[in-house]
Length: 264
Image (cartoon, rainbow, N blue to C red):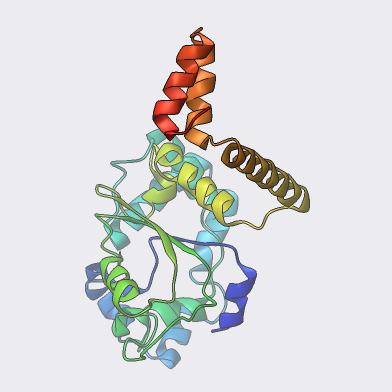
């Protein structure tokens, strides 16, 4: 781990974070894979692409058959369903999402002594995983995600990792592992909050800082004028609203006088 990288990030958005393994990792095929040591694994899967046939199929098979077969494979392996997906998008999703994966990296996740065996990507006995350098954190997860578990992570963040600034936790009660970006309503449910968090945490451009300083100075001058004139900011608003409603000057003064309890 390189904790100093956190100081260079304005935000970390975690989608179904794979920190704690879910119950799916205790069933087939994980039970078979986690018993394989590296020597056996290398004999079966090699050290380069994991299942290179998938990459070859990606290049040669049309999108609809590829999407159909890809869905069946992942539904079997991870118990996913397409309940929350738009069916006509499935070929596109499976066409553009898969990418070549190192066999050695899959061994780290599912092989002997890997993530599915340990149950946690980090050592849970360590007193602290993160310090103040960890960037603001936004977590999105599904209530029906059985591949990874988010609740133990949230509990640790609340009780142990107190230096981490968790700015958002969004749970899709009916969501599965990939529904944060594959859900039919993902734009409305998740993407807009992504943009909100990015906008709230990103560094300001110099021109934005100048504009903010100008607005703060203008507000400061206005507040000072109100104080000197015996008017609060609220009384000024009352006065402006009353004038807009066509009230006479005397009535405006009486309203303001009752509000601030000063002679005007």
